[in-house]
Image (cartoon, rainbow, N blue to C red; front, side, top):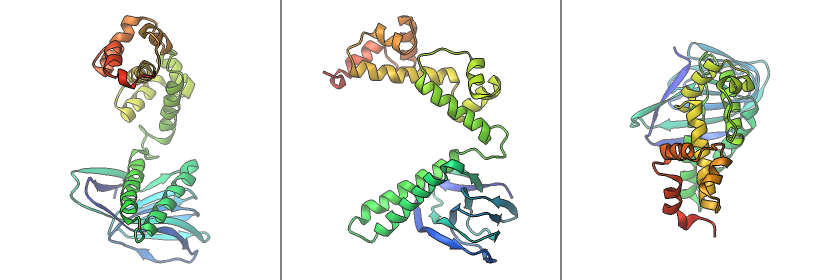
Length: 272
């Protein structure tokens, strides 16, 4: 049995139950539901999903496939968030979710999201039932996508430490986009080998670090073209590309047109 839950994606989603439920220390029940189950645990103990064993700590989030036996042995009682889902089988794609994700500092945020889903579920019988139902499906899809894109801790290529380094690099590129730095300098800033960082970055974002930085600079340039009266040369300097011809080339490679053409096409958006 693998460590991942493969779920259909693109078909209908139905939330059957969501809430904050107690778990007893002496709980010996074996669960085997016909639904996918998502749990955010707030206790320590042992969990078996099929033949896979997991040592739980507060903040762990687990996903259990339908018709799969699971059981708990807890060192003390506690509570967990629980959501049971019916996922249609008509989806042409699939998501791969780890059985266990160690949410850590993100656990409170996930608890808030599950709490909001519970609130929407209660509103399904009220005067805003239509919007509540739409909100539920959107929220569930968002949660599942979040889990899909989180790296499995036991994956040596996209493990938690590597993902944290990539996230740190992205934050730096978003803020310090006008500065040039070599791959070795960037890797040193986040404490990783340059080749390993480049590989992990490409696997995460589907592009090189240089391409990501180019897109970020063009993103800022678009904003300045539409919201200021700065000349194109001045904008180029502000995003870290002193050579106007090089800036024009980079901008065209992302937008398919020159900065001047872009401004003319969207001049009705520009600030007065």
